[in-house]
Amino acid sequence: MKTILITGGTGFLGSNLAIRLIKEGNRVIVVDNNYTGNMENIAEIADNPNFKFINHDICAPLKIGEPIDQIYNAACPASPPAYQGKHSITTTKTCVFGAINMLELAKEKGARILQFSTSEVYGEPLVHPQVETYRGNVNPIGIRACYDEGKRAAESLFFDYHRHEGVDIKVIRIFNTYGDKMDPKDGRVVSNFICQALRGEDITIYGDGKQTRSFCYVSDLIEVITRMMNSEAGFTGPVNCGNPGEFTMLELAQMVVDKVGGPSKLVFKPLPSDDPTQRRPDITLAKTKLGWEPKVKLSEGLDKTIAYFRTKVQEKQR
Ligand code: UDP
Image (cartoon, rainbow, N blue to C red; front, side):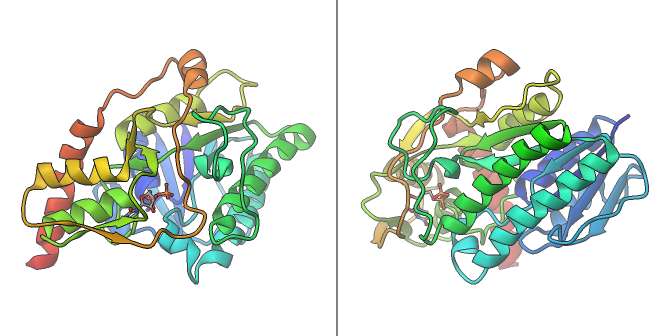
């Protein structure tokens, strides 16, 4: 049994990870301030004797009495509408102070630490598909910069703590992910389209809808995250984690409307600034070093996600 700490453990990815690690028989400590997370996401493990929740903002240092084997640093607002508005400064702080505080904790405990980095480090990519060696094209003063530059600074901190302090680090770059435990109000494209279709509302396409994204179902992502954490010593990454199937937002909208049915029409809204035109991971490194590739196709993952959001939308209507 390992003792594993997850920051951001009441959020979408963190809670899916916490549930899996509890089921595998580990002791799991979730640290979150529920800024964008939700206690409902961890309700099914809250009473497990191996589970502990700590309400804490990782912008402040964290003291833990017991030994810790592994830390997953997942805490950060991750939805563009969440980080582009009044939460932008909090987002940079969480990325930077959070990384420093968790790296200090890892150093003190001799724990291995894995950073949830992002495809956003590539910004508006001029290399397609994106390989880990590509250094990206980020606008440092744009509305996405708090997240993109925050995550880039966190990667830099991870590698400096590894080089100078000997901390055992792993870095993954997560591409668009969807599935159970996404917040219906999150504002990202999959949750928006599905909830709009379920409510019979119009589907909001930003821009002309020809921009592309590659969507990974959450169970595939959690699998590669745990493989990376438990990979051979010295293999730091960064490793791209995502599904290389690439779709335009128009294609995604059509798939959702076809599956859900109902009266929804596509309506066009302005494209937010710096919204990347295309995105697709090259996952050769994850395949060769971790023996991983995604199994769940978009159509199948959407069916599962529609079923999940159907219960959420019905709960709200009751
Ligand atoms: N998008 C859209 N309609 C929505 C929400 C998002 O067309 O209701 C677009 C958004 O402009 C972007 C893509 O969908 O081009 C993915 O957006 P999301 O916020 O899910 O993630 P991102 O990859 O931009 O971080």
